[in-house]
Each structure stands twice: as C-alpha cells, then as structure tokens.
Length: 250
Image (cartoon, rainbow, N blue to C red; front, side):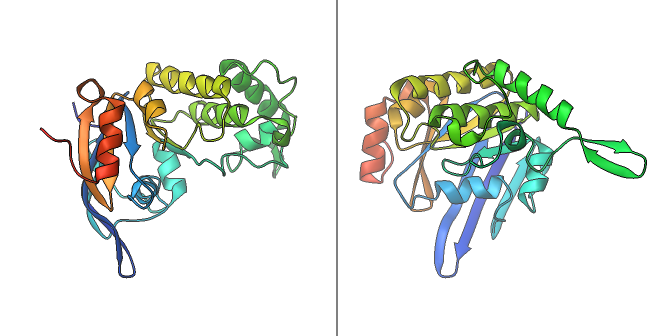
C-alpha cells in the first residue's frame, strides 16, 4: 500500500539560508508521526510545504501515490490537508460557528442571490461541538474569546474532522495548556487516528509526542537525523538525539 504522503529529497532555500537539505519524509495511512527537533531544525518549513504555504526548490512529493505539489493552502485543503497552528487556529472576535466554516461558509440560493445559510452553519457547528465533547459550551454562537486554550485546540481539530481531513498537522498543540486540557487534546489525536486520519504532531514536549505517535522523526539544521518506530526508542533517547544533533548511537 502506498503512503498517504511521501517526500523525497526536499530542498528549500530562503536566500542564502538552506532551511531543508534533501529531506526524505513520509506519512502512512492512519499513522501518527511525531516531528521533533530544536528551534531552526526545519520542522515548520517542512509542514508549510505540505500545507501549500511554500513550494520546494528541489525534490519530489507524492500524495496518495501521485506526484503533487500544492500551490497554495486552499489547494492543500481541497486535497484533505488541514493544519492547526499554535497561535492562529481561531479568530477571537468571531463566533465558534463562523470559525469552523471560515472560508467555507455554506450558502443557499434565493433567486439570483447566494445568502449565507446561518441555520445550517449553526446546526453543523453544534454537531462538531458534541462530537468533540465540548458540552460546556451552550451555543456555537459564543465568541471564541471565551474559550480556554484546550477548547480552542479541540474546536480546531473538530473543524478539520468536519471537513474530512486525510492529514491533520498539529503545530505545538499542547503549548501552554493545563494538564487536563493537554490530556483532552492528546485523546483527540488518538480518536482522529481511529477514524483513519493521519496526523503529524510537532511539539517541543517529547513526552507528549511520544505518547500518541507511531513513529518519531527528528530534524536538525535542515537534515533528517532520525526516523524510528516509537517502540524502538525511549523519550530520553529522542531528547539525547536532539541535544547532540546526531543520530542514535548503535
């Protein structure tokens, strides 16, 4: 069976800086991949190429077995790639329902006009909240500003699932969350996998990544220095690889 995503020899330059230096990377179907490394390792650049924010300067990308480079984030979303950034997941001043459908609002035809279908948006947003277990929220019309950090991440993950994501990318999803909220987000990751969705999770907290991942990939200064099944490495060994900037010692 082909991988959902396969990247071969990916190179990305920003002026004289080579952010990615021939990186090979893949994600299987219904697989959770932990993507880790120190600041400046190239993690964000790699996932932004996957999400269509950047295009590679060299290398090949295969999506569901077919050569593919996403030209922009919209094209990536259409293919089933959803990315949840740490600080840009939701817009505070908008309601939960508007955030869930942002850029993909349902409309209905009234004669020659297209009108926002608020009723459908509200009903579907309510189902999203129920599906992800946010029963404290009384209405999807509530502003996002009232939500806790964990609830924001949950809504963002629920949004991705509602639009049938095939690959969900989570950038520091547990940063600055309480223990209880962290547990909820990690449980969502495992639930998403059970539904057949692949996940890339980026985090500086190796223990969080380790708990939910099937495989750990370590980048260092634009190069891949480790790619191992979780059961063959401990969190402490992963931390040592990151600190040393060198592959595991045999």
